[in-house]
Length: 399
Image (cartoon, rainbow, N blue to C red):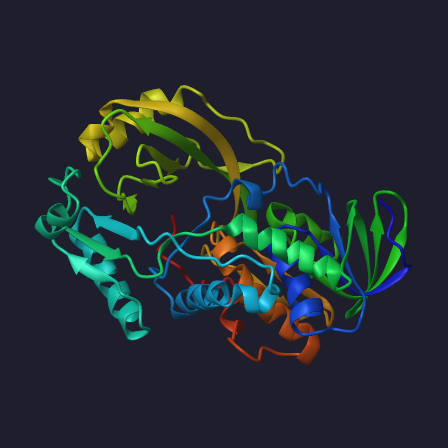
C-alpha cells in the first residue's frame, strides 16, 4: 500500500496496540490538526504481540509509575463510551484477581514491600498466609508456599481486543491513515529525522517519527542511526486447557514461583489459561513462533498438577506461541525522545505489559508530540537516557 501524501506531520512505525493508541490520542482525543501516517507490516496482525496477548490487567507492580499506568487504564475503560462515542461498548474487568505466591523469605519480603507501595497508591492488595489462601481457594497445594499477595479489585481480564478495534476505527474516522508497508530506511540529518523510505520505494517526509515497532524496535532504532536497544523478541507459550473436575470458583491469575502462571479462561468454569516461557528463554527472530509440542506434556502439565491437584485430569484444547518485546536491561518500557534527536520518539520494550499500559502510553506520547513534554503522567523515568547510561529502572513483578 502506498501513502496518499508525500509528507506527514507524524509517522508512526508499527500499528499494533501501542501505535494505534498513539494515533488515536493524537487525532481523536486531542484533536491534532496535522497529518498522521501509521506504517504497519501486516494489517491482519496475525503474528503481532497484540493478537497473542493474554489481555489481563493488574496493579501488582513494584514501581509507582507502572501502578499508576494500570490505574489510568482502569479509568480509561470506565470512560470508554464517552471517549469513543455513544455506540462504543461498555467495558468491564473480570475481577478474578491476581495471586502472587512466594516460596522463600526473599520472595515474601518483595511481596510485602510491593504491597505497601500498592496500598499507598490505593490498590486493594492484601498479604495472606498459606492458611488464609487455602480458606479462600481450597484447591491449591501450598506446602512449599510461605506467603501470598492477592488483589481482586481492578485486576483480571479485560477486552483488550475491543479497545484495539476502537483505537483503529475511531483513529481512521478522525483522519489517521494506515498503510501495509515496511520502513527500510530512515533519513536523518544531525538532530532531525528527515524522512522514511518504504519497502515499496516511496520516500516520505516526516515531521516526527514514533518507533512503536514492538519486537523490531532495536532494528528500527539502528535504521535511524542510533545504537541498538536492549529489546529482543522473547517467546511466551500459552495453553488453553479444559478440566474434567475444575475448581468450583474462579481461579485468580496465579503467579507461581516456579515460573509459570494460570487463570480462569472464559465463563464456563471449565477452561483455564496457562502461560510459561519455553525451556530456552533466549532471544528469538521476530518471525520465529515455533513451539516444542512435547513441552506441555513433559514439563508444564506436571507443574500445574502439582500446584492444583484437580488439574491432573485436563485436556489440552489449544496452544500458541507469542512474543514479548523484552527489555533485557530492566523489563520496563522505553519511552520518549532520543537525547541526540529532536523528532524521534521511542515507545518500546514493554516486556509483556504493553496492552494494559497502552492508554497511558498513547496519551503520554501524544502529549510529548503536541506540547514537548508530559502533561498527565510523567513518563520520564522510562526515558532513553537510562538505556544509554546502563541505569536500570527495575520492575521486579514481571510475569
